[in-house]
Length: 227
Ligand code: C5P
Image 1 (cartoon, rainbow, N blue to C red):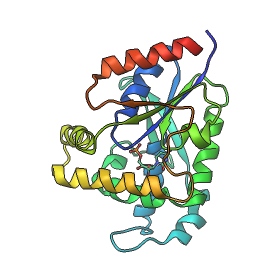
Image 2: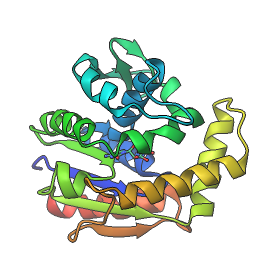
Image 3: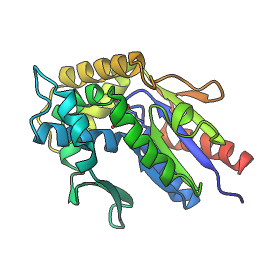
Image 4: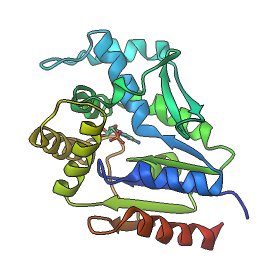
């Protein structure tokens, strides 16, 4: 079986990472969560006082990009790679609602995007990779053999994210999560640089009423057809 590239894009909380992890585990591929990279840059901007409720000092963030080092390190106990920002494990910190509320603003900045896209292309050079995000099939790997575009209703997605955050001990309300999901989707789909759009050759999956297992089996079928 030849190694291929699998690009998974879609709206927030559509279960992209769940599907990507299942595929990577089954195929022995590397899984890369590009959202974690944008989240880690956002955390860096927050820690340095470049972004807050009423302000965003883009220039300072752009000037500091060379001081941001992002690494994924595989955690065998968890079965997936965790995000390290300048050698510190930030996997928990990057999943807060505060980071979620700022991340789409940071992801609009072209200089941030080009730095991360370059690293993502490098990680996928050898193929055998499943990458999820918003611009994987359109910008990072336009030649990916399999492209999936995932959607689900905002209510379904917010409910999933809400449950996940409660499980992780966050103190959030469903309304806060729903607002964040809707706002992020809007910014992500309307930004100038690499907006979230379905690649022409991507297959669209609405998984509002489909189980994780059914979805995995359907996509795996597709992968095995081309690999
Ligand atoms: O996937 P996740 O929801 O963690 O992504 C967080 C945010 O990072 C997205 O809402 C989007 O603003 C940004 N992002 C992006 N391009 C990617 C991955 C994520 O702009 N490839």
